[in-house]
Amino acid sequence: MKNILNQINDIPGVRGSLVIDKEGLVIASNIMSGLEERTISAMVASIFNQVVKSLARGQEEQIYGVQLLASEGNIIFLCAQHCILIVITETGSNIGLVSIKMKASLERLMDML
Amino acid sequence: MLSEMPSDGVKKFSDQVVDDPSSLLFGSLADFYRENGLYQEAINICLTGLESHPDNIEGRLVLAQCYKGINDIEQARAELTKILSVRPENSLAKKVLAELDRPDHSEPKSPEIAAIPAGEDSTPPEKIEIEIPGAEEPRAPENISEAAIPAEPALVDPADFHQGAQAMMALAAEATEKPKMEFVPPETAAETALTGIPAEPTPGKTAKPPEEADPKTMNAYGRILNEIIQTPQVFASLLVDESGYPVAGAFAPQSAGVDEESSGALSSLVFSTASEAMQKVKLGELERAVIDTRNEKIFLSRVGGQVLMVTAESSAKTGLVAVNIKRAIERIKNLST
Image (cartoon, rainbow over all chains, first blue to last red; front, side, top):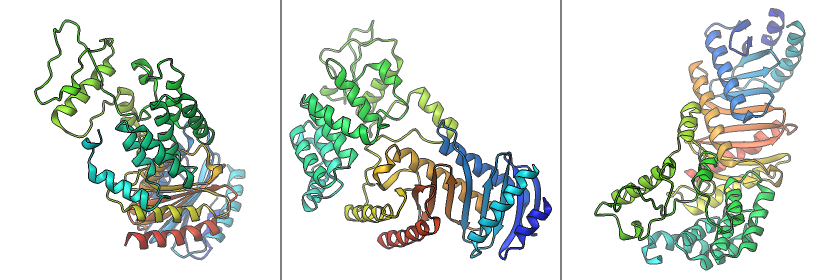
């Protein structure tokens, strides 16, 4: 799992990546200093649950992923059945490349879990 | 009746509609006339406005209510059917249609009112008359107008707490000359407290532009949002203010079923939650959020203090939509400045 995260982190502009469960508990992480993995995981789980609650309106709605683009960095997360893969990038990084890599990595993670 | 209206406001509305027959304000003006019993004038305004905006739900709804007001049930039914064919979830249209099915075409009595989902009863409470058993005559405060005191009060089940409370609130509001107060049934209050989301705003009312907004600016917003939905696979664009109320919106025909009020409120809520989270992890101010789901892609973008929500099919090209949104944001910002 660490290897998968390391490969994501090799992309220029990526500041860290982590895998969490849907409750916000960290399964694996590899992030640069200055970023608080617990805060990030809790926030992402909170946003994920908020989005699910808002979109579902009584129906089962499947969230594939969310991109949050802010002035000083981005958080991208992809959702699988049991886990969420999160990547934190700098502003101006190649979001397309990161997304492709994340999709491939998520498939590998799902096989592992 | 008309003399009692705030003439400045009516004149402003009228002038706007006359100057620009394609103005989206025609629904609001017609509704104003309708509320004051001037049905024929309201119908004329709606018919003229709908020539330019045949998809304007608010205008069509007012037209249906006017037809109902003059007892032209068939026309009212036809208009409501048109609305429901496009927006099957429009609760006000369903309610008015249900009223047409009643023998006296009146509004449903209290048990049915209670059955209406929270926040969907947009009809202003008509004069509510109650008689309290045991009391000789209802005593009204001195400054309540004679019109508010029923000459022959209709009997209402005293056990019906909701209606009684609603009547008391209406009387109290008139007595104190404060803006109209509304009785919130316990279900609504509980729902609001639980979810933190206010009950759905009144259909047809919240879509109106804020009072202080320049109507021409509002038209320009509409044009910009309309251009966004010209992007392939984009089916809705909605500008929402800080509190989650829609400011302006444009919807492609395939967006039938999208409820702008709830979508706007929920988008605003999601964006503010995400924005707060980004600040907590010290990544600055959230500019854009893209939510990718099985059925659709939702783009939420900050436009000053407002949020622009754009919904597209799940297969839509994110890059293309994002570019068009960026252009639209710049134009909206230019308008605001």
